[in-house]
Length: 569
Image (cartoon, rainbow, N blue to C red; front, side, top):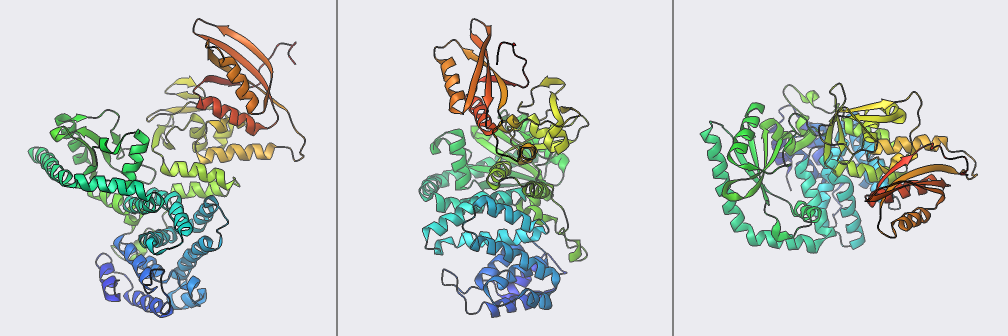
């Protein structure tokens, strides 16, 4: 546990303008009010706020944020009041402490709420000042580091699951990759102890060989740079147990087949050198196709910048390499915390900076969407890789992988999404449900009338698109409970294989849709083309049907307002 002087010395190492007296007062005040309290581990309670303050000092946060860390449990766990804190430390710190306290109370008193609802409350509570979320992340990190002291398994599992599903992806969104990795790995240890131990044992068994190979590869990379008069720092990092576990599951390979356990980072002075080094490596060693990503020209939504490539490198080893400047590396290590600067005074910090992703979340959460729905799709956005597409004027639109043109339209503006009727991708007409790829230029074709289809929910991936579609239809639904029968048509391409027509008819029936007409519209040597006209009493059932057709990789289209023969009811 850091003493007062050690903590202040650490802060003054990067911030000459910190209010030392206020920090000392906060340290002493926290010691005094927590004096009789103990942690689950039996340690003095003051060890926790000091540890949280130390985590934030390592991230080089400003004085008010670290003062808040020292005081963050005083309102909840002692007789201290908001006015007490305001009187002693000012309104800025009192507001920050109160913000963190509100989050802690949500966690402790709302066990009956789902993780989705707690996620909603967390985002809305922290949207006014990002520093509240930074303190909460540091608080959660220290609690996870000491979670072995929690004896009740149910409580331990709940904390770990919440950490994995909320705090780790939020750390990722804020660019704080080291904290994300540690939160994920600590949660993984609780939720799947046996799998983590298996990976640890494997890493320990190959560690001597890994270290030796890492040293040899580093020397070869360094030699290639020296030969080209490039001054660089090369570092290596061993992947976390959880990232290895994710790779095993996503690629469906065994632990023994994982070869790229260590990744390399090349840290340079400027952007030009980054591209020079990329060219040098790609000329000297074979690049693995499809593994190059340029996050310098098009940064991630959390502003992360770097060049990523995978090579069959020295000694025919497959290696992952990240190439970046010192400034990019600082952001990759500290995320949004790297925005705080102390050139003249603490007022130059980035506490008023806005974050588009946070604003988007707040907009989504305030839309009235069902908590489980928005959490499912927001979680998908937090975790997934992204694709970068362009408007006809060259503006970049970031979307989760597998996003459709529908998502693109709503990302531009909700009015564009509601009115879209078609799309041109790279100059060619495509269906709105078409999945977008990196670099696509997308032009949305709109109508003067708003008429988003409820069926779009089967193809929309972003929370913003889904919330807007649901909201539109929620407002359109009649207030009375009379059942309204909807009609739609589905064109499906089927093989000649016996039973396929029956399977589709059964699938439609299982999803509570009534077939009132079937037409064979085309017959070829390899396939049959049918149109099913269906009646729908519940549009959610139809959406589920479309999802199942999509899951079976069937070639189908939805036909809206189809004109049928007069003899068909």
